[in-house]
Length: 440
Image (cartoon, rainbow, N blue to C red; front, side, top):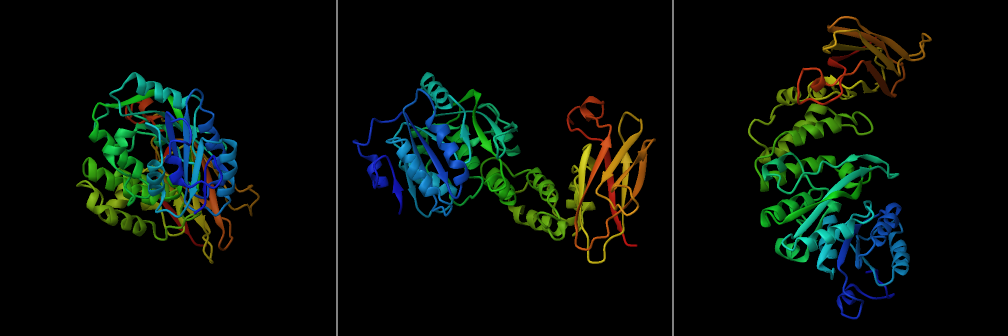
C-alpha cells in the first residue's frame, strides 16, 4: 500500500500522532483516481489558501496513470501539510470516508481532484463558522468550468432555508463549496457507499434533516466544479438520474419524473453517435422501469406515455435523432444526427410548425447536406406565414456515414418576453412535429 506524507515512508496511522505538526484548523479531503491531469492544480488551489493552517488528505484509489508519483512530489513540495495514501477502495464515497477518518482538524472540507477552490474560500468558510458557533456547516456559491477552466455558468445554489420539498427538483448545494464541523460528520456517519454518483446529495439531505437551522451560507463563489467527459457528472448520467430519484424517494417524497426526462434529453443529444441507444424508446422504457419504485404517481410508464413526455422520442429512430425540447420546440441552432445505412437514405423530410408570436417570416438554413448539385451542402428557405410546413432535404449518399445536419432558424424569441408563457425563459424559434427518412 503506497503511502506518503511529509516524512517519506510514514503510514496513514502516523498522521494521527501528536508529533506530526501543529493541529490544523482545517482538513481538506481529496478523493482521486486516474486524474493526474488535474491533481496538481487542485492541490495548488488548496495549498494556496491564505491565512489558514490546513492539511490536505488525499485518498487515491490505486491509480494507474502516474498519480502516485505526482502525489509523492507534491508531498515534498508541501512538507507536513499534504498526506496521501494509494490503495484499492470501494469507489469515491468509500475514498471520502477513508480520508475523513484520517483528518485531524475540527473543520473538514471536501474537494475532488478535478475541482478547484477559489482564493480565500477556506478563510471565508472558517470566518463564517467562527462568527456563528451554532452552525455545523457552511457552503457557498459554485461555478461550473470546462477542461481549460473556462466558465460554463453558475451552479443553481439555493439558500439554507429552502424547504426540503424543493430538494426534489435537484441538489441545491455545489459539493466542493461545503465545509463541515467534525461534530456534524460524527453525527451523520459515513457517506453511503452503495451510491456511486449521488452520495453527496444524500449526505446533504441527512445533514439538513439532522441539523435544521444550523447550516450557513457564504455569499461568494467558493469553488469551481469542473465538467468533463471523464468526470462522474457527465460520464455516468444514467446512474445520476437513477440514484437521484432513489435519494429523493428515500428522504423527501416520491420522485418527480423530470429527473428521468432530463436524462432522456441528454441521451438523445448523443444518439446515435457518439453513444448509440439502439431503439431509443425501448432504451428509455428500461430506465423508467428500473426507476418505477421511486417515482411519483403519474410518471410515464408505457412507451406511448414516454413519447408523449418527450417529443424527441417520437421522432428518434435507431439511426437518427434531432435535438428538440420535450415539447417539440427547437432552439435557434439545433442539430440532427443520422447514421446512414448500407443502402443510404436519399431524402430527409422535416414536418414543422411556425408558431412564433412575431408572425413574420421564419428563415431556415441547413448545413451538411448532399453537395452533388453544387449547393455547397447547404439549403436555405423557410416559410413566410405561420402554421405547418415541410422541407425536403437531400442527404449525402455515403453508406455507414455519421452525418450531423446543423439547422439555424431565425428569428428566435423568449416565450416569457412574448406573452406566451411568463415562466418560459427558453430561447426558441420553431417547432418540429415529425422526421421522415425517404429512400430513392
